[in-house]
Length: 360
Image 1 (tube, rainbow, N blue to C red):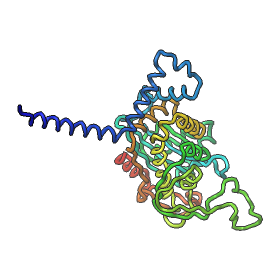
Image 2 (image 1 turned 90 degrees about the vertical axis):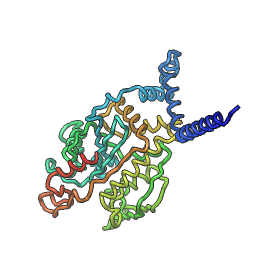
Image 3 (image 1 turned 180 degrees about the horizontal axis):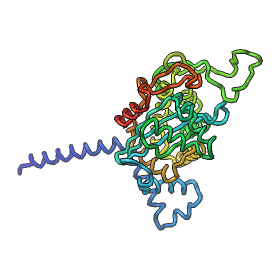
Image 4 (image 1 turned 45 degrees about the vertical axis):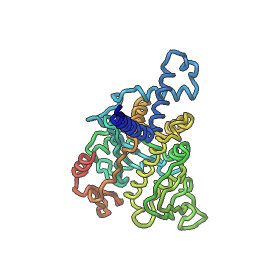
């Protein structure tokens, strides 16, 4: 009896099985999270009364989120060509001398069909002629003009700069930003360049007279970050993204934008890790921190659908900083109220529109 052919078939089968096994194990945490999610959904929507039994409990809320996460359609989101665009703004909040200025300004484009996220940061000092003010004040002036007018004006202003529709906006209060990261158990951020900022403002001391010290040194503290991977709690991460007075290139708005994107990437990685996903209490704690720290025109169902897209995008996040050649700093004159500002090098936003369209 010739067994060589059978032996070859068996060896080939083992090889195929081995490859499949390695591929599965490589993504085991992802597979487990999907299985756990499906189990939660089945329990919640089944007729065994588990939903009613747990109604009002944290676990019930977690299961509701899981159900929405699995079943809410992407059509819940406004979009164009399968993409939803969001203005992401960060404001100082209480304890800062200008609590409603959004010193963080980003444009996020989220692909709903082939899950991926693209993010570009804009310098806060971009001059907006229609407002006769800087970009970071659009949200503030919108609220001054009418109640709840901050988000619409910020979105329309960013639309002018990008040439793209902005469907939604999210304003994150930096006071709550710390709580979000702390509820995640901290994040790991790679610091590209070492720097020292000897004039980092201490919240609450903006008007301190410092006992007559004309340098007002008591209003500031010195912070330092060294190149390399660092574990950061909320307070440390906030200082990292807000630092503006470091020597050299790290003291520019461009560098600060890059640091903000590094922190966002680190937060995304932590949120999608098994340390968070497999712990309902942590998921709810982070969700509560987010809810209390943001203002948005996204509904709860919008947010859940976005969470699903972010989840399946996994590591598919691309960040950009607007190329410096597209902006210039004009002479400080009355035209811009004697302020340091950025204006489009070409005189209009057309080149920025082309750059956004080409990259997004």
